[in-house]
Image 1: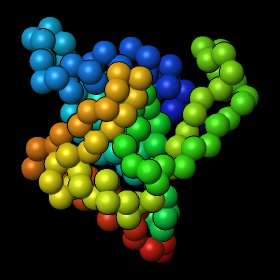
Image 2: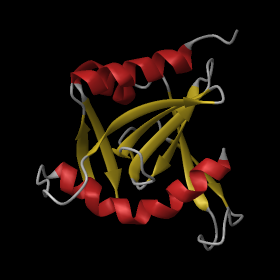
Image 3: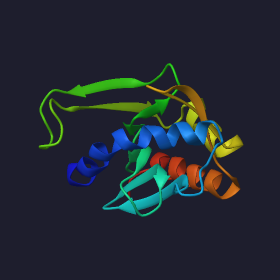
Length: 154
């Protein structure tokens, strides 16, 4: 899993500006559009907010069926008091100088449920607090992600 996350973590510094642009609804024509994307790989579901088919993402959550918590990566994190922080002190690749921070959030958290229900996920990061939005199709992706996480293992 780290082989996939390492390039994403390295690119996250560049994404903060794109996430801030989304927050102010000022989308430039020459800038790729950020949106919600759901993928499945090796039994893991990944819900990411970023540019399609790229490593440019502001937020990614991963889980497996039966997980009570989703791992959260990115420059922005869900703005919920129930976020659990787990820091890793070991460098994970040559591009980082001391590790990365991973957080976890319960898949039943009301903040996450709001993304699927009303299309809004309050987040916070170095750029401050703002809301990532989702259209109806993206809301369905969020609900599918949470349902996949909550499903019992076979």
